[in-house]
Image (cartoon, rainbow, N blue to C red; front, side):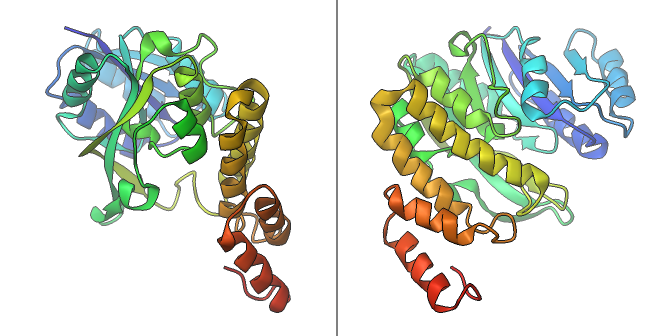
Length: 298
């Protein structure tokens, strides 16, 4: 049976991490290892993980950092321990449906041109367990090659994604993108061929809570915006044959980031979006800002 590495990336999520681990251990697929990369947690996560390892001998591998080194470096520390034919990425606060790994492996085994696959996610409110919406409702999921991935951006939720391990570059996640390197990893994986394929089925749950790293003006979100802009630049530098797609994506990234930093850079980002090929929405946003003297923005 094909071996799968479930790579869980976590930091100070002890209670939520327990739920994540239990969802992984409840898989209907048998041949998997759980690799946990903990980025210097101080909430007792390390001790809890060791207890799990004792309960399930040979099932776990750990990278337990003593200091916080950032998402991308932490992800690479875990990736270096993965020995499976496939690598499934998980956030330490997200959940798997029982058939997730089984269905993704079966799909990738049946579709050798698929080097990355992902599925839909139920986005839910942590405090109430209430479903809010489907991930695909806001991200317009689709399949395609590297050109599609550059043009569309990070449409695949990280915790929904499985990679063919032998297609992942030795460098792994780009560490010069400290928090938002998963999109670039997908580009690198597909750069020599292969496809990203969407499985239109809900096979996991994405948690929304007050400590999500993606909060609108959190330091992580601000750095994530910088990483998205940098990713567009890397695509232009390293994959010039896809320059048109990279410039179009840059235009969208700039427009989508207009409210980050408390709207401090609203106008320059909208102007840059429009100048790099933005559509009518960018122009309307600029006009609205100018007419209201910055009091009203789209």
